[in-house]
Length: 101
Image (cartoon, rainbow, N blue to C red; front, side, top):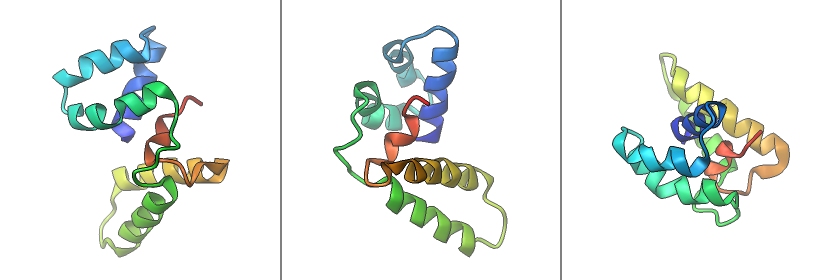
């Protein structure tokens, strides 16, 4: 989800619309998450929660505290999820991390 979120941000910065970015993602390695969550991100409605940001943030905290070596990507995603939770979006779908900021 973080890869999709950052891809959309980069595309927007380059002048592409969300639909244009989502249109080329099937050619990339993040195609599965783009297919699953792209329509949610494009709609901007994260209320149909399949798995909440708060629950995934909790799971990532557990992973980070359990690991005996650093998990840098997991730590970055945990921080993104915690920002969403802190902003009042914890009950929304974890894809809320792709919400425009």
